[in-house]
Image (cartoon, rainbow, N blue to C red; front, top):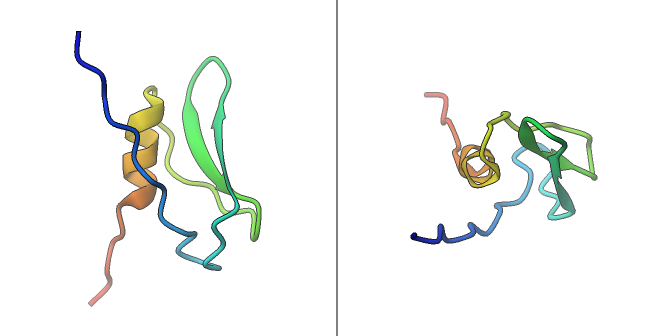
Length: 60
């Protein structure tokens, strides 16, 4: 069985806060910013939710 590496969360893309919470009840998991209240994408897997939070989409 392989262990997945935990990702370091990037600061909030909206306010720059590093005060982030990983939320997970039974399903799903998501990241929330304690600075501005923004919520990241949900995923069944906490590590995937972390990856999604760290993904930045750049508008041209």
